[in-house]
Amino acid sequence: MSAGVDAAGGAAAGAGACAAASEGRAAASAAPPRVLVVQNSPSSGPRRLAGWLEEAGLDLEVRHGADGLPASIAGYAGLVMLGGGFMPDDLARAPWLAAERALAAEAIAADLPTLGICLGGQLLADVAGGQVRAAHGMPERGATEIRATDAGAADAVIGALAPAAHVIENHQDMITALPAGAVLLASSAACEVQAFRLGRHVRGLQFHPEAGAEDLLRWDEAALSAEGISRDSLVDAARAVEPDSAARCAALAAAFAAEVRAA
Image 1 (cartoon, helix red, strand yellow):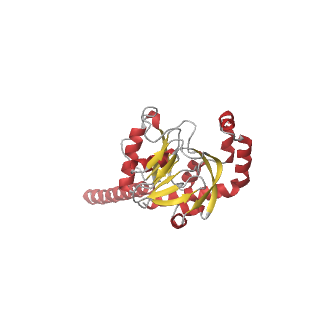
Image 2 (tube, rainbow, N blue to C red; image 1 turned 120 degrees about the horizontal axis):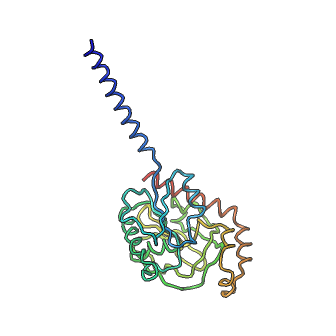
Image 3 (cartoon, rainbow, N blue to C red; image 1 turned 30 degrees about the vertical axis):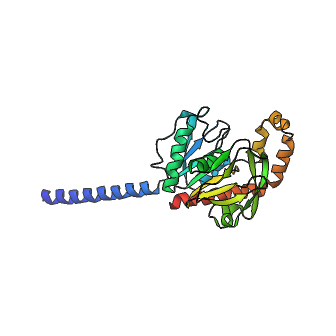
């Protein structure tokens, strides 16, 4: 009798263990995809992009380059590299860029869903064999019209901006030649390469979807004045297009998150 009870108990315990293991696997599979966000400047964080990506079901790990970066993209479902006041090979001022470049090369090789923003986009282009020039051409400041190419309009992520949208810009360094095989996705009047794609899922952007009109209030007024630019005028112009701009940038973020979840 006791043997029967023990067998039944053992079977019940075994069934319980199997159920617990199954629940554990289900919980693990339900964990949100983890995305590495590389911040290159204390003042250039993910801002509203963080909220949009988290709302879309992603788990963000924001790492400041100066504090050290992971050795590999292993374990991450996506990569976001933010802006900063450096050239993509400026290792003397930003030594962590060596590690960031290695992460970018790994992401390109794996076709990991990736967004490189401003410096991040320039870094992707440079690592893949394109050309980036410092202080080249006309500077772009504030809300700028970004026009999608035909390929951009058909792109799963950049298509959110088609046919055109105003997005914040703040650069003069620019990509002057795309890597072999890259697809041009968007341009502006002063800068041909505003967005491009490598493979299916790696994209570089020159513009800043993470920045909104009110962020311009923190820009250096004296530096803008030295360029003959009024910060108040930039803010007013950005506020005028903010509702549409924010909606388009939020849609871009949601589309990127969808690629991360599907990868």
